[in-house]
Image (cartoon, rainbow, N blue to C red; front, side, top):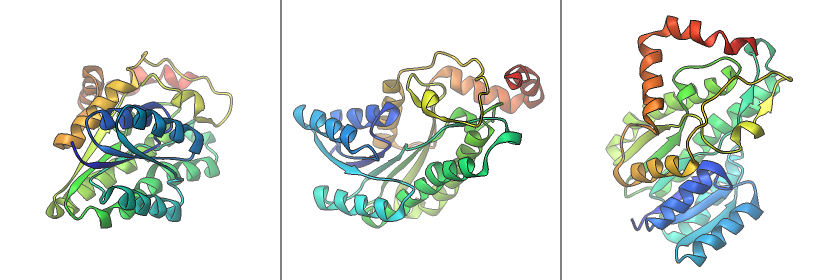
Length: 255
């Protein structure tokens, strides 16, 4: 690959898997996350396997922190070619019960954080490049108990659509990746509004499968990427049958 890739939220889950996959394919990987200890361990793992990596403690909701990370990436590897906006938080709870502070913090990370990273990386993407925004299938159709989280992913999708047109003349492609349920600790670590039950979810795919899709987008671009046939089918079904989807989802709303 021979490119420099920034991966946010690289300390665990999809971000960690994506960083490992990109490094395996020859990218120099900048590991950005708040957990300095975890990304330092990941940096050592990649270096030990013969790859190139740089761990930079980063809070994507802090613009200055993101700018420092982008400068460090360029000093280490010369440019930024790929940005994987993966950092994100979860939030569960009925819309009628969401705490404004929780929702505000969610948007600071999931939406403003992505904007911070794009704005900090663009000055160093003079040769063109790829921006990959990790959204979710619930960013295409909100489901009960995660309306706040879904709204942040809807917003990220809108930003992707706008940037795709705005940056085309700079030879920068924008890809949106829509994972469904993934076998990570994301759901367990998400904020809860109260003691609400969480509805049934599919068992999900391993993060390595999502990472493969991200790495392929980093190499070849693309507009919208679904991880599994089930995810693609869900997106198609809710678009064709929105009323029926409402009826089916009512059972989840009882949690």
